[in-house]
Image (cartoon, rainbow, N blue to C red; front, side, top):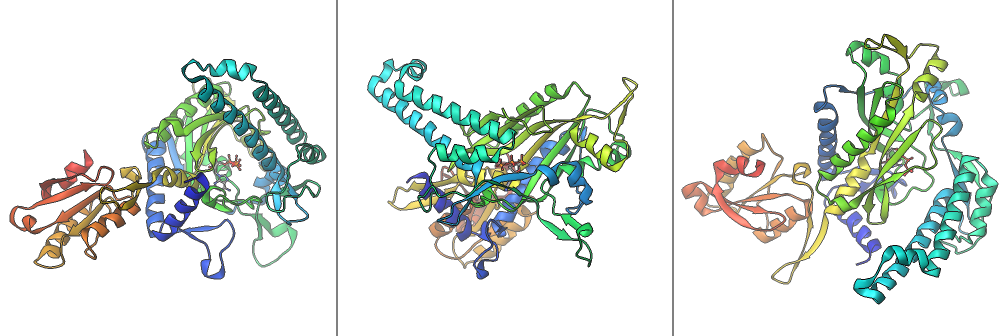
Length: 501
Ligand code: ATP
């Protein structure tokens, strides 16, 4: 199965088992907007909780807030979003499809990198054990030509983006002979800037002065509450403020399922530090955040850092944690050293001081900020796609199993009476009654036990408890493990300690 087929299967599975539905489906959907179903909302809440536990509960010096989605419009002028939160877009005249110019170029670069990788695979096959990849990269003419080409394109693209030179971006697309994936033509319009913020009207008047925006990031709600939290919480630098909430972006290239949505959720933490300490904390948070991801157990090799060469106007260091989605390595979380840009701008635009008095140095200053910003939906997709497995069974059938980290699984325990009579359902419900206080449980008595196991595998339930006639005699049950499918018999009273150790 190629990666495209796999991705399609994951999307279909997410719908079939109540994880994710296209929004407004009976009206043919709304592009790049999705609803989370009965299983999805549980997984999503568990991810939020896992993040909140690690960031807020486990740190004395990090607290959370929940700020409003609507904010004063001047905030987005101060943050730079009104002036600079733009994507360069280009249309293909034949297909009438709109693309992000930088993404077209990135995809072109990925193709060149794939060519290089293919060449290396060829070399590896040819030379076997004696293959020296470094030497091969440095000497093979095809690799050298493609590597030089890629560096040249990237340099030109970064320069054009940094200078906001839209003509140069278009020229680069033409020079690279990039065609529209739909029409196959090179009939491109000029590149234009497009602001990603959604706007709406506050109150009943619809004039300019009432225009407000749906926040494109949760971070600004933290910045404008920095002093409120610092003073009321008597916080001492270094300290952090965390928030989970919706953000909205009118994305041009809205595809790849929940990877790029127009309405999505972020989990952000702004860490306020002494000026000069920011790069130390930047490294600290890079390490901490990677550790958090790796603890999920999806495989260390699925993560990598991408350090930004082209920095946003507010940053003095930035790195992404990328995850290997079915469509390749892509950004999952951003870690940014944002200097004092945001607080300084809010001080300027609001006329209110945004300073901190440091009792240790007896100085007043605007703190520097290191931000960790992770997409909740992208984390969901990372877990879902790494968890999805199709496996052959001994009886020749196949099962689809979601190996969701047990702590995050929407249902932790399935309670299954072997048959629907002889008092087994009553006994099963009795057992569930005590367990459900601690764990999300699901009761199922319909169909054969095999079919019920399949259903639980498909939603990622780590443990299935079967209640049979022996249970009535000696109060033991069988417990089946999702991943190994092994079953053992244990006393019903030991289920909770068994699955929590
Ligand atoms: P990209 O380059 O992929 O557009 P970004 O660099 O604009 O992302 P940030 O502004 O750093 O993203 O936002 C922080 C995080 O929010 C991202 O790492 C990502 O996980 C998430 N995110 C951003 N845009 C979207 C979106 N449209 N849909 C879902 N998640 C998103």
